Length: 308
Length: 308
Image 1: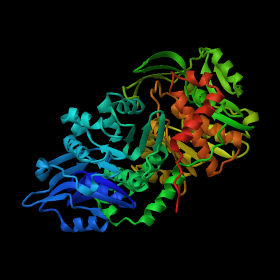
Image 2: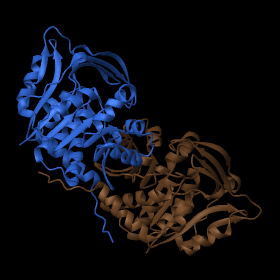
Image 3: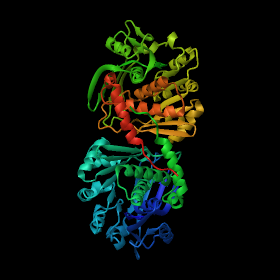
Image 4: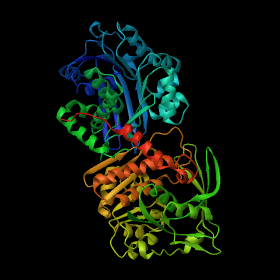
């Protein structure tokens, strides 16, 4: 059983989609990553921070899922990071209505001693300086450091972001962000440019259009499962990252062939995440459901053409 | 060797993309379909119309590719259908600058006797009444009737379009058009609605995001090959349709398994079509290049997860 160290925000979210509203539910990159990774036999820990207002039941749930929360600081008298957003009708874009950093503003991550030798580090979306500090605290170079980020950090902390990107193995990023980071419209070219910045592997997430994995001359594509309804896309990318990193930590194999499987597992789990508000679906997700949907993934993409 | 009957427009196009301009080159759905289908061992014929201005060399090229052009009428003193368009920077949208129907305005299709028993009929994008007239002229119900259409006919001839859709086996349509035709945003639901209108199979083309094949509860997805450069997307959908229908006519097998392969062949050929202006790339395309790229397609999508 490999060790997976998870860094990310832990939020309280209020979300509005065309299908309804959810007030003050748990969100943030770390919970989605941890819940997705818990689908694999992995020992994981979250490094993050919340306020006194954060629901105890959710912390218990994480512990039940074998997630070490000893490095998830609870600030007495503090308030948890709060985000409020509203999705447009096509669910492909959203407006941020409120962002209150609260306890996240002064967050100083401390990696627990028993995870300083984690094989896989999943740096979820956060300030690049926090991501960097976590890398610096590792006593052994992890087998694989994966970083997820977003356009906000490109707009506001580009140099810090580039410095941490230089030290990682896999960057996961969405298509528009890959274009913004590289000034290349073609995703093939963007992935080439990103590989020059440091990471050997690049995963470009295209939401409902799937995800691409690039490594040198190799490209692999995993579609998103075509769904009748997408209810709430919040956390889909983080769930992908959790499935991807969780599978790799559980198997301890970082070959390109195994990264391909990790992309499929990440896409598979993300297809569940969007079915309900926030982390709701991921909280109750059974491994038997996950396996069943993997069959659908296989049927969706596998074909048998005789090659010459 | 199966027979493939191709109906579609034959144009003169002037195209501007961010990469350059091409004046008065051959375009239209039928040439792209025929060139793509000629990559397979198939006997094909085009039913269409051109004016006296149409280049004789292109007609000779089609004949060299084993395309029967005896039902491609040449109207003395007439002018070929002319289209002029300009693509936006992202190549995903375009403005039509000029449309001159010319000889297409009074076109009355006549299916040649030796193709009235064609196994596969590919009804390329044209007025639905012309598509309907071709079906009426078949002496035997073809094994497979495939229809491609576009939003223009939904806006202007919806009832006629619905009448012909009722009589076909496969509808190929792009994502926005599928949504427009059914008022369903979810492509899964749109495909279900379209199956209720008549066709047993629905192919939804998503351009650079690939294509989905639907049949009852089954879904199959073929990605578009990630390309460094897309030069001119004109005709990509028609090339897809030509590869799809050509492969099915050549193999004579209309099982879902074989339709999956047809979708891969269509996507593969479309990836070449966009590399140059108009039909340029398809005119010189060698079967060895096609086979080589099929290997890339397989590498792009095939994975090996042990299912439980």
